[in-house]
Each structure stands twice: as C-alpha cells, then as structure tokens.
Image 1 (tube, rainbow, N blue to C red):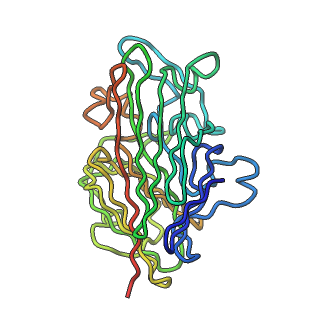
Image 2: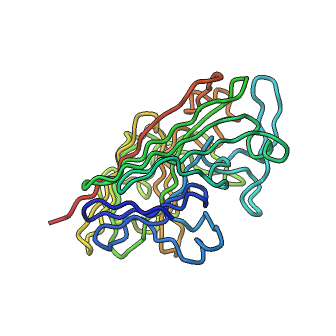
Length: 295
C-alpha cells in the first residue's frame, strides 16, 4: 500500500492490485467507495475504490475485433461475462516508480508474449500520476504504443462512490447509448428524463449502466448530509461518460472514458472516440477530483 496525504485529504493506493485506488477520504469521510480488507488481501480489483481502464474502456463484444486487416481474439476476462471488458491493465500489478508524501507515479509495461497476447495483442507502456493537493486529487493517465505496428487505444477511469442517503448527481451530455442484447450498445438516442442529470438532483434508482456521448467533462456528486461535494473535471479526450447505478447496492460509478462501449467494432471507431497510436505515439489525459465543503 502507498498512502498519500495533504491537509485533510488521504489517498491509499494498491499498486499490485491493478494499480487501483484503495480509498480516498476527507477528514475520515469516504469520497470514494472504501475497499474491504478482504479485497486487498485477496487482490479483488473489482471491489476497490477506482481502477484504470487501459488500453480500452468497457466491452469488446465476445472479445473479438479486426484491426488493419488482422483478426484478434481476446480472453474473456470478467468471470462468466460474454465479452472482454475494461482492458487488461486493471488485472496486472503496477510498479511504483516514485512516491513522496503527496505524489506517486505508477508504471505498467505490457508485452504480448505467450498468454499475455490474449490480454492485449500490442505492446504498450502505461503510467498513472497521482498528485494530491489540499483541494483534491489530479490523476494523469498516459498510454504509449511500444509495438512495431499501429494499435487501437483508449483511456478511462472506473471510480466507485458510496450511495449514501440523499446523494445527488449532476452531469450534462448530448445523448446516450441504450443497451441491447448482451449489454451491447445500440444507436444513440436523446437522454430520457429518468437518466437526465443536467440539473443537480438525487441519484435515485435509475437502472443505469450506460455510456453517454457528448459529455462536457464535468460532473458533480454532493453528499448533503455529510456537507461535502466532489467535482469531476476531465480533459476533452474524455468525451464519454459511463454511469453505473446498480439497483439495491450501496455504490455507484461515474466513469470518464475516451470512447463508447465496443467502439472498436463500429464501422468508424474513431468517430466514437477510439484513437489509433502509431509506434512511439502517446495518449495522455487528466481527471481532477475537487473537494468542496458545503455550507
């Protein structure tokens, strides 16, 4: 575990468990879902506070895609889920390259050798840079193509938040992708009222597990009873937002991502946010989590 502190803020990192965040607090109030001790002990990344989505976000249908005339088949890496999901960086240990009281840099080098090729068939290097200030957390993600050929690429974060009584949410987007069969996205539609959070309102139980397009890079979560709010500010690369609100659970997720779900299998993947990196090219973007005390 690596622990960062600055003023009233504390951040726990678990580099060996997918480069995950294990906890984020302001004066003891959890700003992200707290990671159970058992999850840390047993390496259960899906129960952590936040983990990186590299080199793609969300689903690739049946783990299959074609790129530059070559067919690829990925491992189905999410239990009995029928698709490959969230890349492979969240399932690998990261290395601590530097760390001090309020700063940490984690690095992951992926080489597609042997079974590793089924995680992702292209070589890459990824970094996460955590900077903790009295105002909040800045997280910089980067992904560099270290292969000898071009590779499709995306970035994202999967932070989870406590679903406390009265929690409120706000974000603005242009449209949403409803899910069809096997939780794969259909064509984008106007945002229905139940899923519209353009004005700050209680989270409720909207049955959401969908990707929003045309996101303006801003979201806000307010815990009225605890008198604290968390603003999410993302670079323009993150033009999509996945919102996951499972019914009857004590958490929800608001995920800044660069592309829509299964973008790689769309007729024009780059239209949906997917990038193509030439050998040696790098993709870099930031997400800021700003903390505000409510009056």
